[in-house]
Image (spheres, rainbow, N blue to C red):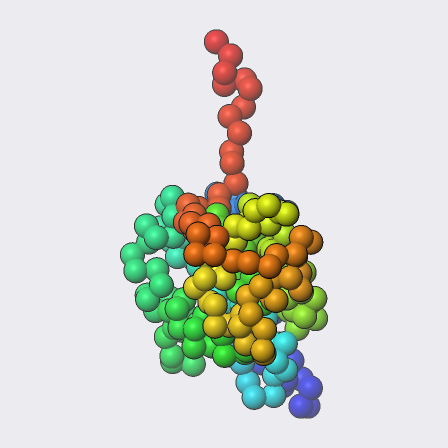
Length: 235
């Protein structure tokens, strides 16, 4: 009986998984038009997140996967609700708006990130969060689950640090994401500094970061390019 009750308390992330598989490319670019076509499925999933919140008997992996999916889905919802937009920053008050409700408590993206996710004490979460921006870590085309979350934390972190669109680390150049500047305290926990953290994952090791090492964040929408059909160019 307990196992049945426990199962009923879990969120089924399969609808989100399907939306991501269908509408997110391997490079993280999103077909927002495709998401809007499946918007009923998306809204049903979002409502399901609101109906079930993490319980004490959930594993850390279940809780982390839940809140990461909540953040990414909430950011997606704000973009879809106001679509078309060129940036999430065109949405009214995107970081402070109480976009998500669970057990009578309303949360903003800032609260989900700073008050919940960062308190897990794992800086790698920053590479799984996507707010629909070009400089954000790539939106993974799968939902996070208790089964894949630990591997995802390692894989997405390694991918982000070695992604030349997000960080330019060569033998002669060190240009890194502002994520490392904004969340410096997170990366310098456990008696390591940012350089140590990056070098755990970087193919090319670094030994110095200066004030001008940070790449200005690109907030433009991570929208999949729609190619103009060849036929439309014919006269």
